[in-house]
Amino acid sequence: MLNSSYQACIQACSNCALVCETCAASCLREDDVKMMARCIELDRDCADMCAIAAVLMTRDSAYAKAFCKLCAQVCRDCAEECGKHQHDHCQACAEACRKCAEECEKMAA
Image (cartoon, rainbow, N blue to C red; front, side, top):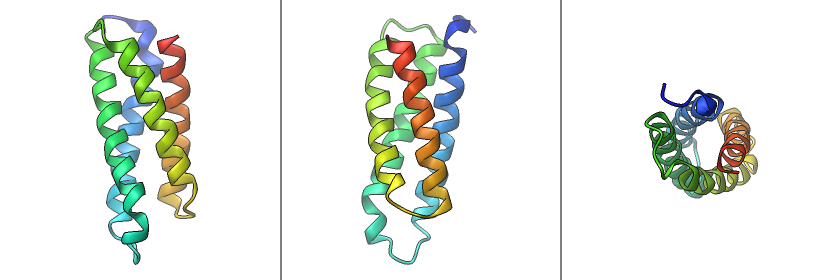
């Protein structure tokens, strides 16, 4: 690990990416998939953003802070959308996204 000060954010991003992928996959199995379309879109975007953010921090990229700022916004949007749905996977995703957004905002400050 090049920069141990990023460790909490890397962990939060890695966890969020996995939880978002799980949520998207679970949403696809819901009875009313059309109602879950925006949730699935945001889950996928958030998972990708979080995975890239973790990689950028791991390599101590000059772009890590700027990317984490954007990642925090995507996480907040995903948390808001997932929070609207009562499914356990959506509620877990909303929580992981909120935690990740907080860590990314701290890191980007």
